[in-house]
Image (cartoon, rainbow, N blue to C red):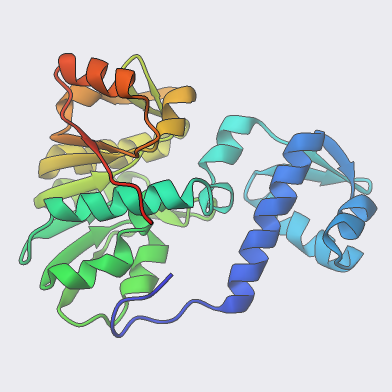
Length: 270
């Protein structure tokens, strides 16, 4: 991933660690229970490295580690985590992110949520400068740090490591005192033409951002329409646009359009 002008380059070691931890998480999810020695052999790393990775993943609530084994946690929470989401449907997310750039104009104040789909927009924001970017996501703050002609407004609050974002009452209070031109967000699932998320804290923050923005754009790849999550956000009709990838079935796109949803299908990236 390229970075904005003046922004810090990501560490290749951190990238490798994140990719490895994602793969370990998926291996544990697939097995249900797996021995630590088996993980070390499977990934060609030391048992000590596996222990360190498992300790970090356990601290994020993605799995349990005990008596030489790792045990999977509930799937919806794992799928909401930044570790799990980071490389899922990356091509589709990139196409959706590029399509979303058409909804941003220079000089605007935009709000960005903590989704990995929105993260794909960050390297392209320099093309829309000057901009004011408002976000509760530490990863976005770090990516845009020092970028020329981008004013960064970071929302504080209680930090949640599993999604690399600040949430809670302090965060929503700060949002309520602001106004934005555009809010760009994704969601964990779409059921009955309603956006859902597994985390209530996330729903509170996204909901507050939704209410203070003049335009609301939902970025959602086709796989989200196959998932379920616990807490309702908003009906798709309330968004000014819902951007999906080209793998979304045409029959579903037509059905949503007929129901009053403004669907935008992102072009496939070559």
